[in-house]
Image (tube, rainbow, N blue to C red; front, side):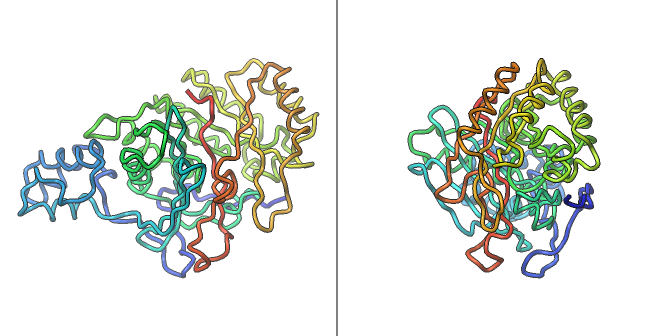
Length: 396
């Protein structure tokens, strides 16, 4: 059994970057603040408060970052305003693309040397970004290399939001051939456990869904927040009054196995986690997505499909099966296709809606479980690959 990790649920969780530097939160950015806070920050500079709305409209409405393009700001004060509200948070290190350019993976270096990755995915009818909420992860799931690497620090609200705004700008510039030019969906399924950085993730959700110039103006129903099962966080989310989709990374229907695959299960068992998820579904009317990585001879047995079907039958839930993608050094592999098909058949026979996620992005190590926050060897050879997730095909 994997030992239960020591969970740091503090919003100030920090550690040491892999190059030995002390991890620290970035300078304040307008995305960290609501519109009133931005006005106050501008007023501190001796500028008129309405300038905050102008800068916000550029960033969220026009997806502009270059101060030279913000010509409605007085030239004499433009630099001071943008320096105070738009510090550079993300420094692209490497970008890879596949699927004829419609899947793009970017490695970011943050101001303190921390590394994170995010993925932009274009489809004929939508554009989705998968974002990270932490540098590293403290959940210690043994099939996820990020979890094995441990947690460096939480991302700030603005570092989360800036990933989305950056990619929204890329989509608007036509970076995804044959896809819409407007970002429509965000999934918190990249590096980290979102509910372990609860306050900043919720603030990011609000920035992303508030209309411009307050925020990016996305639909709450097009935001997915994932968790390995932090029950207090799920219950807090239930009280937020949001209509985002909750994705629960279950991976096993029985406590004996889940204690090993998802060590936090040693604290909150399957029944308690599902009860919290079902309460969220009942309160919001939003179907819960049950994420289940299919691992050969580990969790893909017919009896486990039957047990999962009994647990979910009649519930507002959908199972999203994830073929496990290989990662260096892993002792596990994906379930054979006949086993996968039988698992699907049994779930559907129990009346549980079930889909199998595709493996898009595998050629650039951008599929589920393959992303690696590595800058080509300077910080380790893929030891910190994250269990990246992607948009549920049926998320509404």
